[in-house]
Length: 196
Image (tube, rainbow, N blue to C red; front, side, top):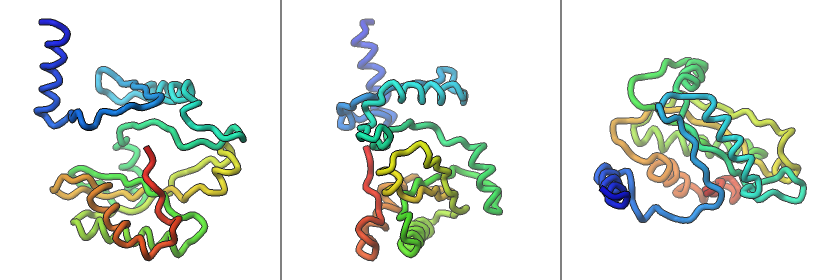
């Protein structure tokens, strides 16, 4: 069997399993891929990913201050054991089933708008049958970001919840629609735009 035949056979397997769609193919600048081939979580994969990211520092659209960038980063699997501990801090035990983590970029200097955003997110999750464990404030080391980035940075929080039986894309179909529906109630800078 030729390389092309193997490629097409494997591609068809991915298509049949709904894991590949040619419409999702597009150019990307500075993309790297690092994985553990045995499928086991490994800290070395994360540190290698950080090193790879440093190798494409130009991808971060660095400002003249040498620190402010556009938020390039790495994508990792949700560390279940870590979030199990975080969920315990909210007074809950992790329930059976899949859990979800929503990364929220909230208004930092307007507490009223921040609470309104949280309320909208929580309402949308609850309306769609999700159980919310609580919120986690993401630690930020402001000493390493530029002055411009620090002046405009959002409050970064994670909402921790249990998925219901219905398998849906929470970002696009639940919280985002609720935020868009309710967006007219918020200041124009309250909802961070999606970044690619």
